[in-house]
Image (cartoon, rainbow, N blue to C red; front, side, top):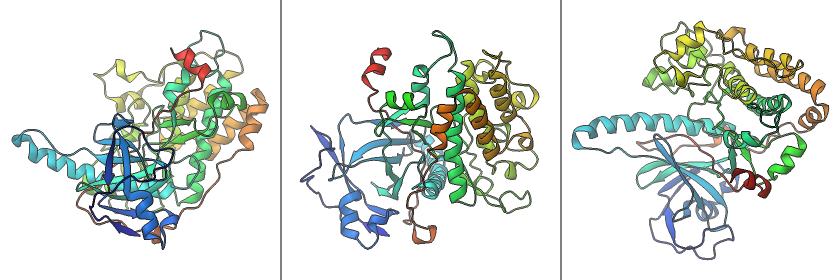
Length: 418
């Protein structure tokens, strides 16, 4: 359902307790294509709930290479993330080129929204409220994820030794199983879905529902996969090497993963059958195993940042990951599992379900209580409207990517960070 703003100035009014205090900036969206079920048949309610927003001066804002994510509140005190594209700029001589680049990013932004809409409503994925325009540019409105990235939380996960470089093996497996459960939930909901950019910065540990100390006690982290700028739906047609060109080939916009974690097929444009290879859930298998490998060893499988003069694609195709010695005899089974997921040839890697089962069975032998906690907590599917109920706002622009934000860590963890 599409809503249009009046453009009139409104008073924040009787704002809820979650709204920012002090000086605030009023954001009145020009239009919004809501995909929330609360908006169906209730245009006035949706307008009040989503189109008039407040952002505090100095409020959390994250700026990436092409977009900006800002924490905003509605009149009910609910927090959201408003993602917008950075506009074209620079000198007149560069402006035409910048505008052309902006149009390409706008196409990618629309693709990101479609990906977010596909998995919105599944636990472990950010809920998306809608797609609209603000100040003439495209925006995505989504839930604000309160927490810390896995990269920032990893130093506080249990270690095998007090000063060890890597996270304890059972925690490596627990993180792996939990992410794979989230990926499997998306597979079950859709004809196929791949995040395509799993990295420690794109895995959030939520802290608003359970304090970190409780999560550490249970052996299961409350995880959310964020930043869907490279995500893609997968169907049988896309897996066909002779299929019609996909978004990447139509626009020549190559949405790659993070180099240290991405598989070879995400780092090339001309490999045989690259279209089908770039539409496979095994992309996430490789990236996740790279993350888990880093958690265990303290470094990425190839440490590519130390070899900037080499082709990442050729390195990952021609060489094996840096050898890691198991810290304990029982860790070899875990490392073998991760190395299988790091196979350069996509067909040699295990699937998501197979990898999840292997990690869970290893964890069952190593830490039965943690494995049982994971078995009792599969991702649950919440309500999400069918695709045919959703319509996009016609706009010349489009955009992409959620970067979750951080809330305060528990007091005991905060003291360790200082």
